[in-house]
Amino acid sequence: MSAFFPALAAGSDAGRPALRCGADTLTYGALARAAGAVAARIGGARRVAVWATPSAHTAVAVVGALLAGVPVVPVNPRTGERELAHILGDSGPDAVLAGPGDALPAGPAGLPRIDVDLAASGPAVVEPGPEAAESPALIVYTSGTTGPPKGVVLSRRAVAASLDALAGAWSWTADDVLVHALPLFHVHGLVLGILGPLRRGGEVRHLGTFSVEGVARELGAGGGTMLFGVPTMYHRLADALGRDTALVRAMAGARLLVSGSAALPVHDHERIAAATGRTVVERYGMTETLMNTSVLPGAGPRPGTVGLPLPGVGLRLVEEDGSVLGAYDGETVGEVQVRGPNLFSGYLGRPEATAAAFDGDWFRTGDMAVREADGAVRLVGRRATDLIKSGGYKIGAGEIENALLDHPGVREAAVTGEPDPDLGERIVAWVVPVDAAKPPTEAELGDHVAGLLAPHKRPRVVRHLDALPRNDMGKVLKKALPGAG
Image 1 (tube, rainbow, N blue to C red):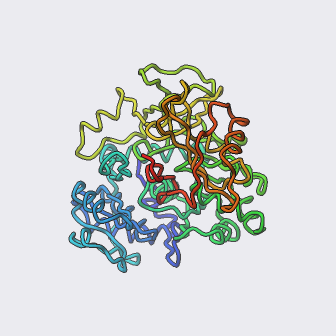
Image 2 (tube, rainbow, N blue to C red; image 1 turned 90 degrees about the horizontal axis):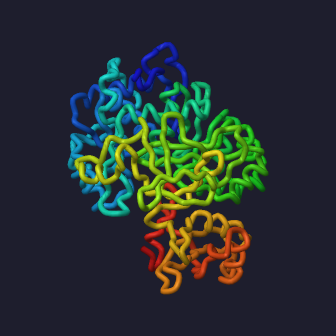
Image 3 (cartoon, rainbow, N blue to C red; image 1 turned 45 degrees about the vertical axis):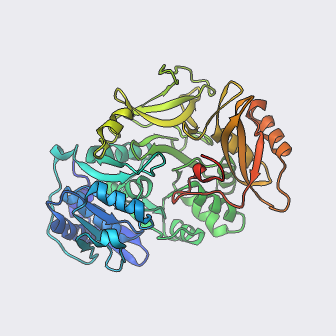
């Protein structure tokens, strides 16, 4: 593996813009100096925590740690006291890196603190060589839906392989200017959104906080070429396109619009394409695997699919009995299993959990999908929460959610299953209506879904909510639905 950040090592493009976040702007020369100062201070540490605010300080801290060969534990500043204590106790960082103005709670405050100085000038740093490819780069904690969060150990090899595969699929180069407002403690925002452009030698502009105005500004007059977002962000952009001609021009001028972390509803795909002429590209990955698949730019609209496996990634669908599905019929549901250089090294300190997550060298994702005739993957939900067995059928919640969102009276929708003495499980739709005073009826929505999909996929129960519970990445927290889980 070559240098992780060739542009930092080159020196010839020191004046080239690298990073802008709010009022903070760093060229590649300034980034090399500031990150070099971080690397000099943490050299020899076993691992460090980074208080991952959406700031240039976070980017410099992570780059500095990678230059020093020190694994990073990104910490969500909004993490609750109990979970924070678990993450710090489990990972045992030697220090915490933070911005000078960041106020840290009791747990991190008890660690040696290193303030990141954007104006610092450290010595030139020689990156770890190819022999360090399997050494940890990041330890990212999962959401902990089935117990305390687990530390996912991502090697330098895995991060580089995933970013390089995306660069090939998306024709991502040093000429690209990436715009986003994603959190910097997850794979999406930190690995793809910060390390991705810096590895290419391009520029990243982080909005700090998402806003329609910020996207329009940076993609428009700002010259942004790529936009990364989650479905909640694209939904808000789609809502604004009808009244904001500057946003229409900005998004139409972007080279690549990418959505991830959850499925983008078909309705929002269609609204964005109609207004801008641009197709939103969806890709599929998770913390343990980084990126697995992507729709290819220019391949034409593929709403509802996450595309084909990336180069180097093996992907198969597996039945409950362990048999591998060979049919690409768009209907037969199986669990996604993947293998390749993009996979994590294991769960920190949990060899049994690591072993249980694999079938040989195939990682069990827990995601359920079907494959179209051309091999494209269409996710239908999580095995634990989104696979509904009703009346002898295996039904994915995702396709029903998309059908519900096609109804003009539905603003948001989630689908779960609950026990039923006759069907085994009945399909339950959780709906946020457009007009709370006149919500669509159970019969109306049932007929709507049955007409689009099949009668056995109709919701048997409809429950209205003011809003769906979501996490920081916009994913619906189904276990937090009233009475669910």
